Amino acid sequence: MIGRSKRLGLVTLLFSGLMIHLLAFSAWAGEEGGNWRGTYDEVMLWVNFAILVFVVVKFGKEPIMNFLRSQKDELSLEIKEIEDEKKAVELKIQETHKALADSDAHFADLKERIINQGERKRQEIIKEAEQQSIMMMDIAKQKIGSRIINAKRSFRDELIDSAFDMAEKQLPQQVTEEDNQKMVDLYLANASSK
Image (cartoon, rainbow, N blue to C red; front, side, top):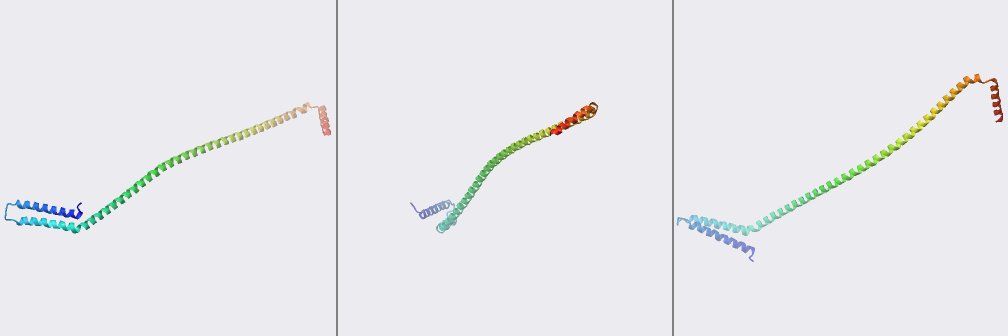
């Protein structure tokens, strides 16, 4: 295999030969045989170009290659940083999606717990209301019972008072002296037996 510098020299030589050959065509194509100055200037222009290419390749190859390598390294470093940033952003997006999904699951769980807690509270309120209504019914029954008892007492007292009043009005007319004596004797007999 041919080395790099040999290849470069060979390419330069072939390029120079091609240029000289092209210059010869333009020199031969001229109509005036005695005007060689235009052809000379053109050949020298190509020779100068070839020399410039040789000098640039010989002395500028390493700095140019170093510059291009440094540019390549900088670009690859920049591309790597951009890719790292892209991965970080993608990771954050995935974390955000996961957090959103977790938030939805947490919200559904929280909603379920609140509904269950509300249902338990409702059942407790219903039980408490039932107990209060039973207590109120018992209290009402007791009040009604005591009112009935009071009404019975009141009615009996009125009945007794009324009977006593009637007896007081009618007894003096129907009780004789003899009945009076019997009651006194009966009272005395009862009092002495005690």
